[in-house]
Length: 253
Image (cartoon, rainbow, N blue to C red):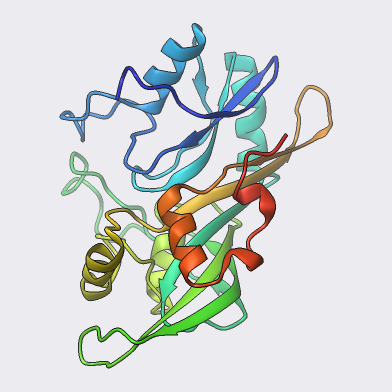
């Protein structure tokens, strides 16, 4: 993938944002030594200059990922993330019928990586985590999964108000509406059904929109990341495109 170019969806004198594909690491990781490529490395080669980390997306999550073009720019935006001043919107397809509006206020413990596992204190306290969920569409499919003759799914928007690791995925699992394609927190039977029916081998979670006040110009910046063809094909087949903002389907100007 190192020879491929990333989709740059925003760039100014201080920041650059990409539409990260699902399955691509954000930065080099000793946990995934076998992965030769990552967004940080590819983007630096693509634009011919250093970029600086601001936030992260899980490897299986696609969508808006923003970098600083200087360490000063990165620090300014990191401060906005830390203060909760960045508005983040995600799209997910989940198992079951969710309520129309949900506020998931459920503390989460840190997720130790493979290196730290075993070194983490078992009694380490959970930390506050808050996610707002809005359900926009539901569907029942005549497809038997497990012991049920039909399958129900919801299309939801997720707005995390805190930034814990795997927060949206863990919160949706907590309310028993796991995201389709989540091999860590999801339902293996529904994951397999989507692989068989849609050839869907990815987590159906995308960071579709990011909004913040520019640290240098004080103007509002809103960045959209168009959905990939798999997402669009599912939404189209289920007549869900009408509840998707146009900016999530095509690149915003």
